[in-house]
Image (cartoon, rainbow, N blue to C red; front, side):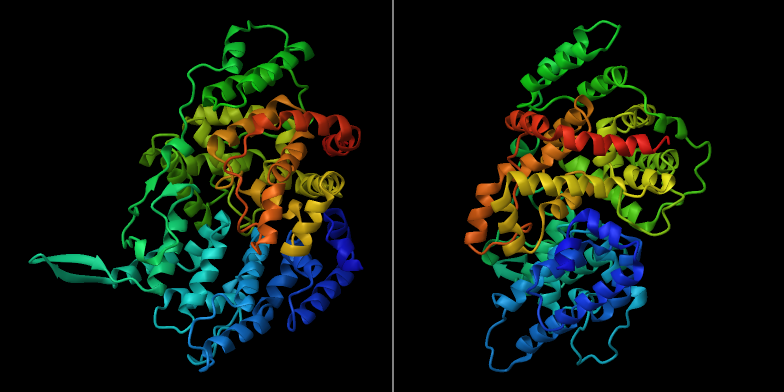
Length: 566
């Protein structure tokens, strides 16, 4: 019963105030997992426990034995001489890979389980891996009997951008796998000439999939295939793939209704009437991509229409940023950001852009006072990366954008690092992340009860947990860039409760697909596809949800803002 209660975000945070009870619950939950992972409430609680510091510490302590039983079962099947084929379609393997995906939904949970400093590597080469860190060592060892299994686990983890950069740091997997692919090169004679080709086998094919996912941050590209015989291997970056430019980078109209509205408006009062007109203009423009300059102009004008939060009085740009040295994972995050911008053709990537993004990241974290709390890697700040792209790397424009955006209450709920920094600085009893997740869970339970049940009963997770990951990586790889811009526009134009309704509309949009996938035995979030979602088709739903829930949600969301100045 307690597990079911603690699967609610607010209950989870409140229970951490009773550390001994919380620790006993987690440790007691681990014990049955040595026999079975079939309890969805247990998996859900463990995947979110690391959101709280005490939960992170406990999970890191338990990491060496966390998955020992399921790993033993899989390795036993691999070593069984009566099995004449690799058991990748076996239900035990599928369950294991799905569990890994659920555990990687939360970056801190993933980091706790892969904290290599707390785990010992088996000394015997004949012994099978007993924990995740040991297993992933086999992904870069082509002679290991567990090489393919480890590659499949690695491929699952790379669905998370934070896991990607974390593993690049601790495992250096990308470089090592490229080297292994190079050993597959052979020369054959064809028409009297020697030609260089890649000899492909199952391991080479799995390495290929991992390398593609590590490099291609966007989700739709031409050249990927699930058919081994049709795969074109590579051993150097960039890979030989063609991006679906029409899908990912649609032509942006030079003029939009929102853009025209903002240009035609003269300087003056920005009252409620003006805001209503701006929203109408956005609704007309919402089904097509809009220019970055329109968002910047909108932010500049809208910040005159909203009351200034006293929160902004506590923020000031640091004169020196030597106090905050970038972590290695953040350097990889910067490289991934510029790769994303280049693949989406969003800005011209230069060596200066990399330097400026490093400076901008450090200065913004100083501005919001996040650096004082950042002792370990908690995930990359993909929101700051998005702002850098929107402002085309212009440092003055970037800093102005941040200075203005923090005046909007809704931003606290889609910029996790800001929410964490303010919650810790003000020592709030309930942090922003928990408040948002709890309200989202309630709305989904009321609006989509059968979908919520199908997701939890069949896939072992909740929508708020999936949304927590989506928001933490600023919707990258989930939504096309043009839709991320529309989300930011909605957060600027509408009250603080609209991010809740936006996230609800994502599940509403995909509910039929979820039911079809569950019926076919496909798990979420692995098979979740939101690339065709367009908020312009769902603004009416968001308005309806606002009328229905704003009396409940806005007081709770704005209470957080009021608590900052009390």
